[in-house]
Length: 34
Image (cartoon, rainbow, N blue to C red; front, side, top):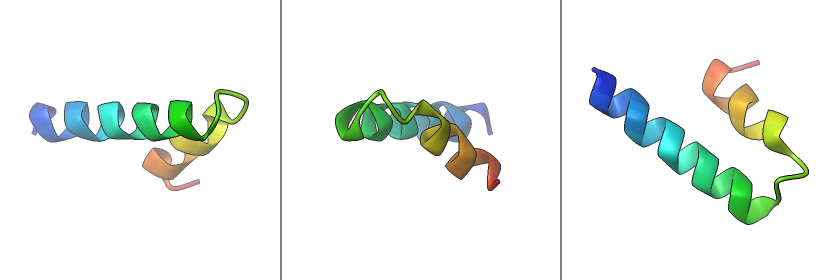
């Protein structure tokens, strides 16, 4: 299941960067579910 994690991380990172690097915690929080 490492491929799914990689894809998810890439998508989250890309979305976070597109939305704005000023909110990096938002992307990580979504993955963790915090």
